Length: 196
Image (cartoon, rainbow, N blue to C red; front, side, top):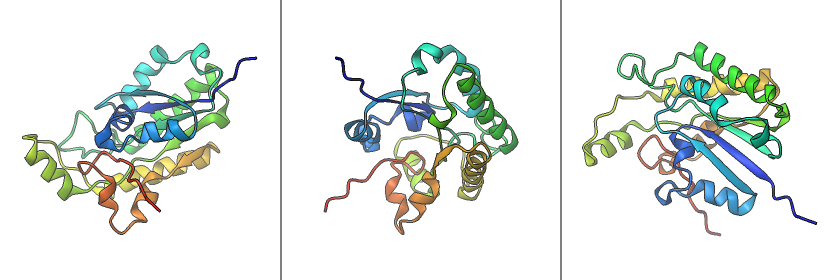
């Protein structure tokens, strides 16, 4: 008799793509170590709009039939400022529509709705991001944590509307008085190991 090892799919932007990198705290690895096989489909710079375009090319009934959960991690790029990040910014209304389209597609290919999990974008730390850009010779558009929080709230509302599980990354990180320590560059999150 073969053992069926549970699988979780992480789908989204660079938060997912970089989830197995040491500088991002190996949060994908830590999850895999504690739970099951982790399948990552993350794309740097992608938004909910981009992911709507590619999802049907990546997922089909065969590769979602035996999974424990499908985690959608989008909103980090969508919540970039409209005026200084036109290639990334996705208005909140469209962000909701895109997430709903992704959810519909997953159900269409046979994924049980109770296996879909939304993850809010994490908070943004401006000073840390500017420092990272300076040290790496990069110029990126500014973000606004107030705007990011609106996307996080919208993601929570959408999960409630569709009765989906949700990981409130924004709120959980903000509970820590030194929450910026969870961000490698002001944008990308990582897990901080806690030793007891």
